Structures are given as structure tokens and as C-alpha cells.
Length: 432
Image (cartoon, rainbow, N blue to C red):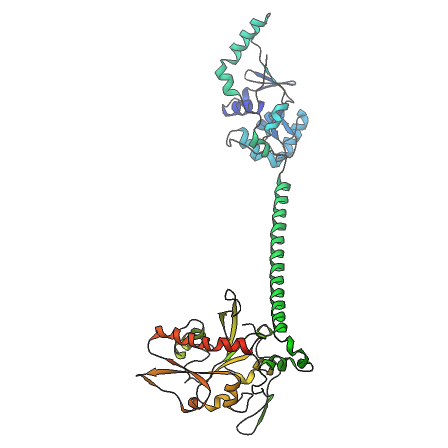
């Protein structure tokens, strides 16, 4: 009578029970307990790390008995027995699996069980069934009860076993997914860069269009003028910026042609602060005052900063679109500003000392504060205003600080309230 039982499982059980020596190999037949197999019956274990063919039952039994011999001698014995050779690379894992030291192996091909020929059950000695009923009685005596049969059953294949098939690799599919993922990420990055580039170009076009629209009635007067003079044409009545400065000692100094700031700051408004340490507003604390609306003495900030910056950037809401922010540049090295950059200056903080204007490209402080919006910040103490004499004679806006820091924001608001309408009236060429 035939019944489907995995020969590999039967062999492992016999080895675990210490019955390897009781297995009989006679001719082309193998007897394992009450089961009979052909010697060339294929098992579910595949050779060469799961990439080769299925081992035969005879080859596995021969390996268990003689596999510990020197490999050369073992190969000679296998050839003499005309059986399948177990490569040296499979020895350790195969022996561990067959002797029960490991419960599973990735090289067991469960799909191969479907191709295994049915087991020949050993017939009862001295009994030759003559009828079907008699044959059934013999089978029940040999195999046992139905519960025993169910315990011996093994699942051929399942969803997971098919995915874990030792001879079928899914690496190609996962590599395809990774490649697709990389292409998607690359496309997103390319799209983002393109979007940023278009946004920058549109921003520049809008600025040029607004400038052209504002000055279209003066186009006839712009022919032949330099870019710097063309940008200042909206304020023709203002004092002209000179290209050569005459110092107090009579020496001549040419205004630099090379820009002090980078080309990225070409359309940014510039605010000038004094270099004098006695001035309340300097390059050290200008950002805290004009952006954060808080006055901090310059000396306190110098203790925390190792080096003085070349310039400082602050951000303010745009006068045209409050949802967008624009940058203002604050400098104190006026002798390094180019002729073109002087046309970007919108405000000047005065300390009260005449030497502050030594390198300004205008003839006098009166012309300077006629051309640029002037400011002087002083400290109000004891209810008295301590303002230097020169400041009283110049056209500058006086901003008084007190010892109460919560009032600093009111002073800052006063500064921007004065500057904003002047920016809109005179500096249409700048990004404001």
C-alpha cells in the first residue's frame, strides 16, 4: 500500500533515534524501519547551497556513514558505490540538519516534495493479502491509527515557502524597486530645483518690469546715461555723488569702481553706521536694534563675538508685499563702497563728529543729509536731551533712548516710519 511521507523526514527521525546503523541498503532498495524506498529516491534537500539538484536518499545515508572520512577517500568511496557526491561546502550544514542540531534549512525545497515518489510500505511478513479487506487490515497494523498518520504528515508548500524558495531569487525585483525609488527621488529634486530657478527668474522679471513702468515717462532722458546715474534720476534735484573725494588735508581720493559687497546685494538698500565706539548704534548692535527692536550696548556684544563682521544683514517685510521679506545691508567702512553702491545708500546714522564724513563722496554734511536720510540716536537722561552741537545744525532725525528697554521698540518704529516713505519715493530701483 502506498502513502505519501517525506523520506527526508523519515531519515532525520531515524538518525535522531540512533537507528542509522539499522537502516538497510540492499541493491537498489533502502529500508528505514517499516518503510521501503528506491536508493535513487530524491529528497527535498538541494545540493550546492540550494542551487544544485536534489540529493538522493542513498547519497544522504552514505554521507552520514562515511562523510567523516578524508574528503578524497570519501569521494572515491562514493564513486565506487555509484552514488551522488556531497560537496565539501555542504558537509557542515547538511550534517547539522540531518542529525537534528538545526530544525530547519534554507536549502530544503518544499516544492520538490511533490515530485517525490510515494513510499512503499513494508508488507507484513508471512502475510499475503488476498482480498482488499485483508490488505486494509495489514496496512492498519503496519501504519497504526489515524492520529499517528496525521502526526507524520508534512505540509508540501505554503505561501512563505514559495517566497523562500532556495533556487528562485527575488533580488532582481527588490533591485528594480530600489532603482524606481531612486528615480522618483531624483525627479523630485530636479523638479524642486527647476521650480526655485523659475521663481528666481520671475522675481527678477517683476522687479525689472516695475522699474521700467515707473520710469517709462523718462525713457527719452535716460539715453546715454550710466546705470548709476539712471537709477538716481528719480532724485535729480538731490546733490550728486562725486567720483573723486577731496579730503580735509587737500588729498584726492577716487571712489572705488569695484563693489565692496557681492553682486547678490546689488539691489539691496544700504544703511551706514558710524565706526566710532562712542556712537550708540554701531555695526555690532545695529541688527539687534533695527530688526529685533532692542538696544544692547556695543561693548556687551563685542565680548561674545571674536571678530567684527564686514557687514550685517537684516530682514524687513516688503513695502509692496508684507508677506515677503527683503534684506537691508548695514556697513561702516564707507571708504570701500563703490560709486554704484553709494546709489543704494538710503540712511546714515551720524555720531556728531565731522571726521565721520571724511570719505563721503559729497562736499559737506549739509549735502550728505540732503541726499541721504540722516539719524542720530542719543541717550535721554534725567529728562534732559544731550545732543551734540553739530547735530543741531544738521538735517538729521533725532531718536532718544531711555533707560527703560521696553521703550526701545518705539524708537525703532519711529526710524522705520521715517525711512519707509522715503524709500518708496526715491528708491524705486531697489528691492524694498
